[in-house]
Amino acid sequence: MSTIVKILDIQTLTHDVKQYTLEKPEGYTFIPGQATELAINKEEWKDELRPFTFTSLPEEDHLEFVIKSYADHDGVTNQLDRLVKGDELVLNDSWGAIQYNGTGVFIAGGAGITPFIAIIKDLKKNGNLAGNRLFFANKTKEDVILEGYFKDTLGSNFISILEKETVSGHEHGRIGADFLKNHVQDFSQHFYVCGPDPMVKAISETLEQLGAKPDAITFEK
Picture 1 (cartoon, rainbow, N blue to C red):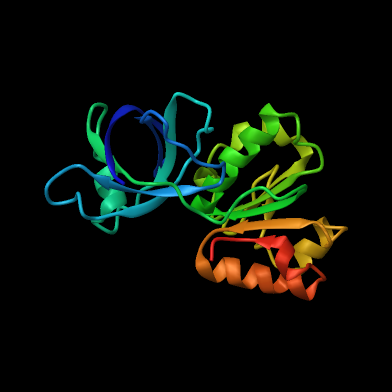
Picture 2: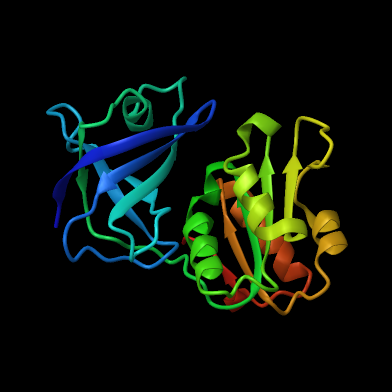
């Protein structure tokens, strides 16, 4: 079932990522890590549904989404980037397979960080952060979403990896077998993977090769 909601606020997080705060319909529910489909409530765009992950918590009185725009493609995210406070979106029901199943390692690539934002917020709120770690891969430092928040929240359990830059405080390269062997001692724990499809496939396969159980690897199928 779809509902029209207004944009209450828009904040710029990086050069191509914004945070959108929306009205929350009464009784609307979701689980941290889940997503929905949104469309822009304009005649030429209202049937163009796209999936986006909630970055707010279920108990908050608003909905929040962190969305990356792609300037080289005149699609929905590029149109979203042009919206202002007061514009309307079409909100649909919540869905998604990425949910917290226990202490482990979160592995994100780029905008794939979004389901983990709500999960980590929820863990922090409930005092359950201990033992959880986040590996966050991006091309450059300016691409890192909410870097300050993750540093403050996770401390040394947050590792940022940059593929195209060498920057102090960030590891350099990509998340592969060598990186995982260097940074993970226990492959029997839970793993949560989200990012571009080729990355998710490669990392999931590598984790299994290193001893992780397939049913302990959570990703959006």
